[in-house]
Length: 309
Length: 293
Image (cartoon, rainbow over all chains, first blue to last red; front, side, top):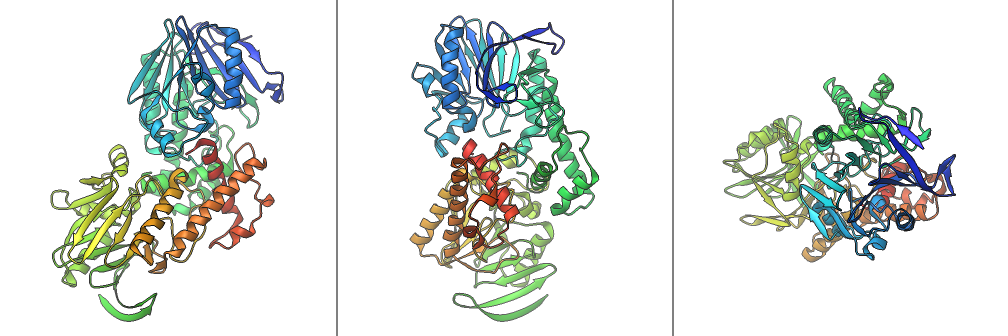
């Protein structure tokens, strides 16, 4: 059992209720299910995580991840609750999070996503992604009695349909692929920001921060394992303070500001990555600063500042 | 302003009248179509007896130079401005046009960028279209074709019907199929790229088009449409290589492929081949295979 102090609330107990025998690496298991409250669980499979809400009227699952992950989750969730799986909510459109839902569809679950996600799956369908039964534009609430999942769309960000999840009654925020505890200033995984709508990243995180304040969120649940201080010092990062949302915003803001500063100084766009690396900009600020990745990120942000995309 | 008249052999014999004004070179491709080039990028202005249509008002000084060129050559002033896509670096001259007097045209997927990422130095379009838009200019006809996201969300291909020429602002060089200028592929949309190329090939076949002009300032004026198919094959090769590498377990935790284990010979036939760029290009495609986007 792990006891975590997050935000200014009461200590939170995080209990592993099931885990694989097979390791991922080191002491980290291939998968695990952790109990956050009587209504809320987190399922990690490899580096990915989703959340499970259990209410009087049924179960809400988020992102099925992969067919293998969904199959494990399906088996394990039945050991935790005998309620029906009523809903599957998609966080965004990327296949690495949303594949494998058929096993839940076969049990009658209703699938919910932002409307633009459906367009993405129509443009490029995957046989492993179950298309949503219901889509929405701005926000949506899924209710299963004494637990619910609120979904908020704040414009394009990591893709063009990522939504922020807020669990009730536990008040945890989940933002797929960003804001992973313990720290939002960690080096990001995909430095090329493929499919990212950079122009709306800062407003997206500001809206998420406002949501956290307004709804008095207790913390965030990370959609990915993260690392502490050093790259490859992997930690579960299941839950953490809502501070990581602000840190994630600052991460992007600092990188954008650094590139803008170089452009304002008259540094030629193609030389900006080398210039910023040589100056050691953000080297001490970004945890796990990776020169190779930062070059790609600086280049991407330069392109954004020159073109608007 | 000095004017040179030279004969250049391209596919056909064209008499190309070349005019230099500041850093902009104007090349008259026929009685209606003028290519302008500032050394970095190039685009077209198409004139009839009563109006002119500008594709991409690159920057203020270029747009001023274009207006002067039209005046000095007794061509009508600009009435329509086409935005080939949403990228600011091709649109900074747009503030010299007034939306009350000018039609500023863009594909509808551009609207997201112009409205959500407002830039006061870019005039917003006042006419959006979805699939196709036609401007009749007496003998010439300009058709804007949208084939889905390719280079960014909203790039269009511009067909000059009488001249049987395509203007393709990005993605394809008239110098031949090759590696992209930026290997981090910031704007590439792999999910719909093949459809973009296939639609382009269909248009070429249907309209019997033989050549195209790119938006790159260092390109030759004309390129054979065969290059388009070859460039499509390049992206298909990238796609299949990334897929095979995944199947063969050659992709690491950060989604990079060990290119030393690949057969690089098939890539070496493409212009600007280099291994470091290939690593980044394949990384984008392993992400695509992972995410579907």
